[in-house]
Length: 214
Image (cartoon, rainbow, N blue to C red):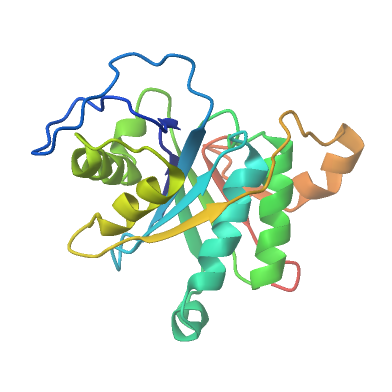
């Protein structure tokens, strides 16, 4: 599976650079937009199912992992039971890199909750374009270009009507307010780090997390 956040989406009568058959006159500048949403995406490379998690707060480690937890809850029981390991491809971004304490702590807890190993595979700098989720963002942008995303309902409905490899995404919205700068102390991080199996050759780019009972 592949995960990442898309650029922030401004809601309102803004031009999105596309065309429409309707007479939707739009502003061509952001005149201080206050309603903005960040999409977090998860795409299953085997099934091509895309999950979109929209938030209007800060893009943080907790926002990402909450999205992962909600994605897991939405999986059919049979599919969850068939998963023996989650392999997650992701960028080395500030909220999810291989030394981000809150991100790693949340993922250790997530692995314990689902009882399944999690392998984090990071793309090196300037190679995020190879992350499969990036192609999903391109499809979404093409889909709603020319549309005025005037409110959150319009944004969500347009996201739901998009398709990735012929499949409509699962779309959810969170109203949680996320706080930036949440970190763990060195002492608190010590037992978390002990749970991380870092590849000796690529310690920052390949990390395996086993559940406590595994």
